[in-house]
Amino acid sequence: MIDLEKIMELAKKQGFSEVGALDCATIELLPEVRSMCEQNTCHRFGNCWSCPPGCGTLEECEEKLRGFRRGILVQTVGELEDELDGEAMMETEAKHKKNFYAFAETLRKQYPGMLAVGAGSCNICKECTYPEEPCRFPDKAVVSMEAYGMLVTQVCQANGIKYYHGPCTIAYTSCYLLE
Image (cartoon, rainbow, N blue to C red; front, top):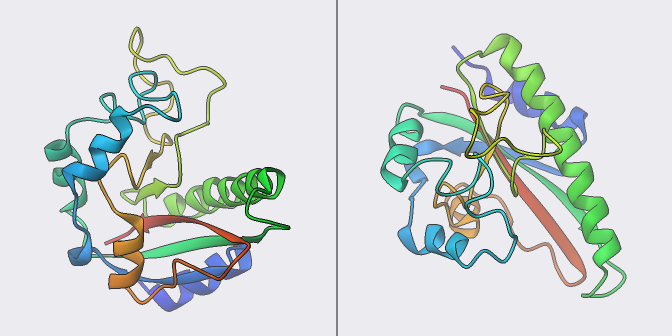
């Protein structure tokens, strides 16, 4: 049996600002969230295995998720000088991803079937092999919550985690599905 309290304590020690239990039954995959990817504002749509269409259809993503009952949500909250403080946003994102990937490796040792779902596109490889070659690291590659079709605010709200931390803040949210 999974000791979520212990795992959440370890996640806090990893450096996440906020950590909470995740009931996977609260996760809804919404086509309208997935369709936002098609607007390609991040320039990753159709360019990597961790983004649509490379990460699979919404139905395929739902099938992967439905095997899980419990997990944890993790957040990294950053302070901004003002609402346009891009430097602090990028620093917070980098800190979140560093901690996220490191903690994923820690969890995989004890829970090899664990599914890590991140914030933003996978960045393990400098250049993705999509679509010419298979993913170099399929067991480590991370699909974002949005690419799965999750509305992050809804997932946080349904699980008692704050999404908005006040003016001049930014929060990066990810999750680990464990059981």
